[in-house]
Length: 327
Ligand code: UDP
Ligand code: MG
Image (cartoon, rainbow, N blue to C red; front, side, top):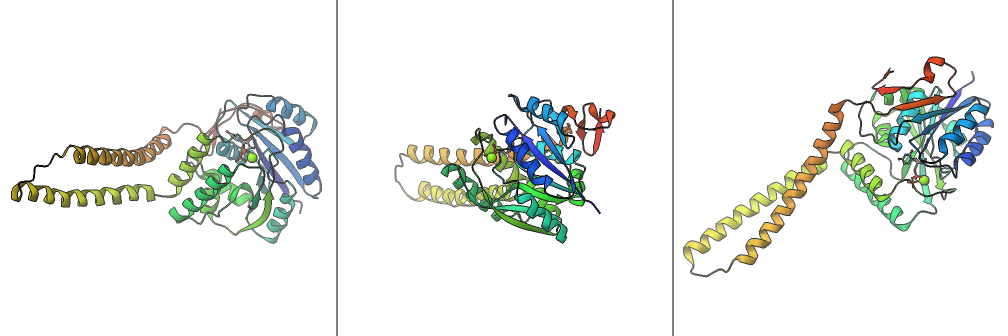
């Protein structure tokens, strides 16, 4: 029986690379005997990415385009791709050719052996700043020490998932999405292929520090309550030690005649404690903010138009709300 593959490519301002990415993906996918579709998700690019893809999709019937109404973020773009993908196996790959498309064929081999999730593990990362490499390393280690879900280190979103896994993921409704964590969380038979991460083909990273921090916080808060626990441990420790200190202060006041100037210590203790209290409030705020996001029940993304779908109905815009499409 012939299989069908979907390759999801999230794009944000990728006009310099996207043509090459398409060419290379096409070359790789044409090598397999099975049929395939390339699902390009334009995540609100402000350059010509959408036009280039629209043109390609009118020439190549295997190319689909989903055009967001604005930038919704990398993880949401991947989620949209999964909603639209029709293949028996679904591959997610970056648009910048850092993940070599040729590895997809190895992933497909593993899938044919019966694995339901095949993730790509990065051996080397080329052409990335020391800062990025170091922070990424720390983040993956920190995350795995904090959660009970076994999220493999040094893997990105470059992976193949089976239809079954894709359907399960589509049913998960959380808004602050950390897709690679969710894929680990759902289980199934998982394996990996190793690859060297290449340099970005052109353009620059679409993950500035701000987005990286947001992404890291999503990863940690979605999969761990540890920061909240740490908050209560610190709180407990502080109340206990201030209680002891209170005894000391009372003792001094009642039984000794030292004249304590006291100003420095009061200010010092105040600053320290206020700082810690604010920090802990911040931790709690992060979680409450996310609860708020979930409770608003807004759609995860808004599609302006789709291209390449034969079904005329589908050419209209879609809004994802859980598993239902509301028009
Ligand atoms: N991306 C996206 N929306 C965003 C940011 C990034 O769809 O808001 C896409 C981007 O076009 C690329 C992938 O996500 O295909 C990974 O981004 P990038 O290569 O800039 O990240 P890095 O490899 O530097 O971590
Ligand atoms: Mg990249």
